[in-house]
Structure formats: structure tokens, C-alpha cells
Amino acid sequence: MTLTHLNPAGEARMVDVSGKAVTGRIAVAEGTIRIAHTALAAIRSASLAKGDVIAVSRVAGIMAAKRTAELIPLCHPLPISGMEVDLVIEDKGIRATATVRTTHNTGVEMEALTAVSVALLTVYDMAKSMDRGMTIGGIRLLAKRGGKSGDWSARVDGDTDTAE
Image 1: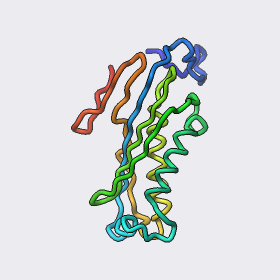
Image 2 (image 1 turned 45 degrees about the horizontal axis):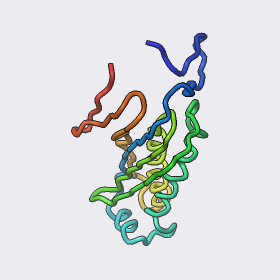
Image 3 (image 1 turned 180 degrees about the vertical axis):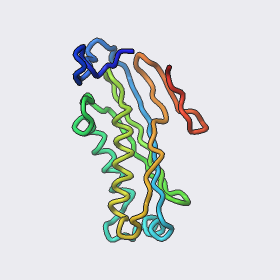
Image 4 (image 1 turned 30 degrees about the horizontal axis):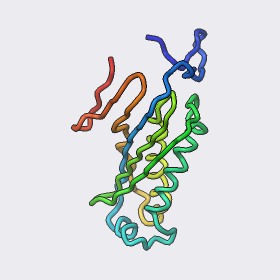
């Protein structure tokens, strides 16, 4: 197996994607944060001192996706053509979902995962005065479309199909 991010001498390199076809690409990622009932109620009522947790976290996720190449070594900077970051309050916490689109010669999976991660970290930052025991987890790619490898989606049971 050839590792794409290593040159023949075994040194890290950025993969040359210039020969890949420019296609429409979409990636969807999700993650959750478990939050104590009292803190979740304060988020739901937008009564935290730091402001509207959902709105600020959504913007943080969008900003993070746009800067993914600055955060992840060897990740290509991409022109993002569209993005949504949704945060939904559930019974025991908040679920973040990010959908990122581009027309380029490499995918936007890292941008979607980064958006979810930073959105959830922002929830933590804004609500930590009420609950320092929040738990972030389940961050994963749900689906990707486009590119040479085609479409992929996570299995319904939460497990993933991986190429051998």
C-alpha cells in the first residue's frame, strides 16, 4: 500500500491533486455534546450570560470550515461554495451537523468534520460556567458525494463501511 501523504523518501508532503477531475463534492458530518439538564435548559431559553449559544456556535462552525487548511497539516485550501451548520437541541444535549459543498478536485470531508468539532467546542466554551462535565463525542463523517471514489455513507447502525 502506498501512503499518499509521504514522498518516496518517507517525508510528509501535500498530495498533488492537479490531475484529478474538478467535480461537485459534498460532505456531511455530525457530532454531539452531552450537557447537564440545567445548562441545556439555559441554552434552550437563550439565557446564558454569553448569549445565544446556538447562533454563535453555528457561526463558529462556518468560520472553522473556511480555515481548515490552516489547522490540519497537508490539507488543501478549498473554495467552499456553500455550507450549513445546524445545531439541534435534543433531550440530553446538542447534535451538530455540517454540510459543506465545493466544486474542486478534492473533497470537503475535513471541512465538514472541522465545522462540527469547532461548533461543539464553542457550545462547551459558552456553557462551561454551568457544566464543566460536558462530553463531546460521536464526531464522524455521515456521507460524501463526488470525486473519483464516488459516493459513500455511514451505515445506519453507526458503524462505517471501510475500503480494504
